Figure 1 (cartoon, rainbow, N blue to C red):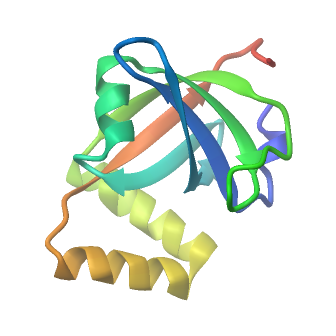
Figure 2: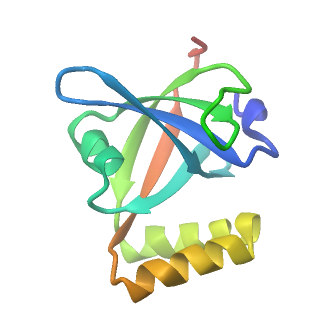
Length: 127
């Protein structure tokens, strides 16, 4: 099920507002086994929406969000623990190299708080 995410750089992540309206956001991601992981600001809209409603849909995409695969349902959880952040920073550095290092450094200079989003894909879900 995760094959379509192999060698992809961007993921379109759809989260849901309180009124059930979907919000699609293209993001960098890494794949670690059967899980997809996203690095985001702790107070971002997507992190807040996931804390209220863990249901998500994802699809590999181009930089501007244009899908290049099939939408898949999943469940996301936000984890701001030091262990989760350290694990994801290592994976993001491996995948995105200098670009992520610069992104991460700029966030640290601005004293931003970050969290990880772990996405578990539903076993039989292809939309």
